[in-house]
Image (cartoon, rainbow, N blue to C red; front, side, top):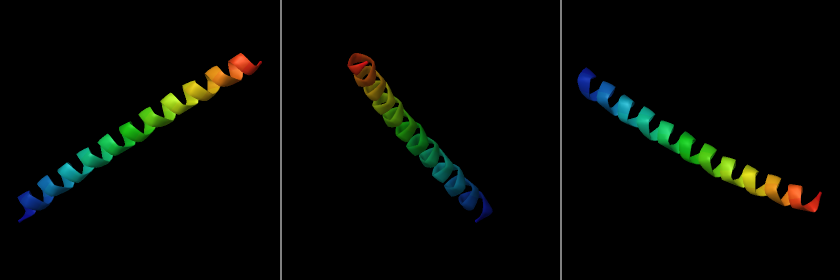
Amino acid sequence: MKLWDRWLHEEMELDLDKSIKKALGQFHDYFIECSTKLYYIV
């Protein structure tokens, strides 16, 4: 049972890691887009 819990925990951490990386990637793209627009306005 402990082995299963550990595996499940590691899987959840991997999913969380992927979610965080995906969110950061989207934020990064958004930030670049905004910076580019601001740059053109200025």
